[in-house]
Length: 169
Figure 1: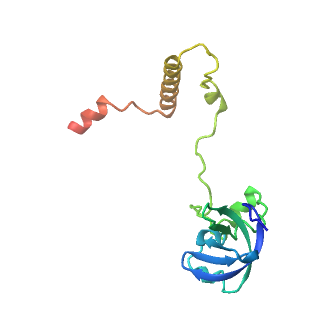
Figure 2: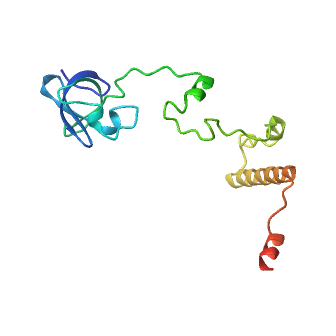
Figure 3: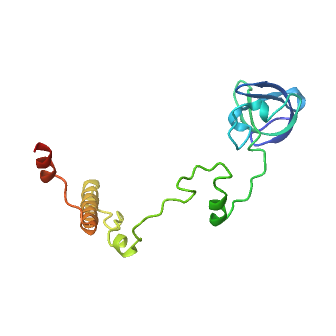
């Protein structure tokens, strides 16, 4: 049987090291499962997940020119169906998610206004005969206009000479 990348096989764990496990495949071939490919969860100690002589299902993820076989246990597992966003938020802390602020995502304080954005869309295809420099200058100008409008909308003042004077005092 010729091994190919993507094959899913069963094998027996023949050795465990701190960086991975060696798995004996059919026809006496041996491959290695790196510690990062053992589980979808964080693996600090591989012996908590695998034992000597354990039968495991593995997926071939790489075969080098020298014949070294890289295997993955986590890629051989069936994928779990994705949860709806509302359900995932409630389960975030239990699943090891690193969401902060009591599992609430960052919420933008200002409401999104599509009219503000749509008037500034820059489309480089409008002037297909324009040179790159012309298109870049147009983009810069549009970007500067948008930034100045945004600053005016928030009541911000341009930082510059006034800010430099206050530092000198």
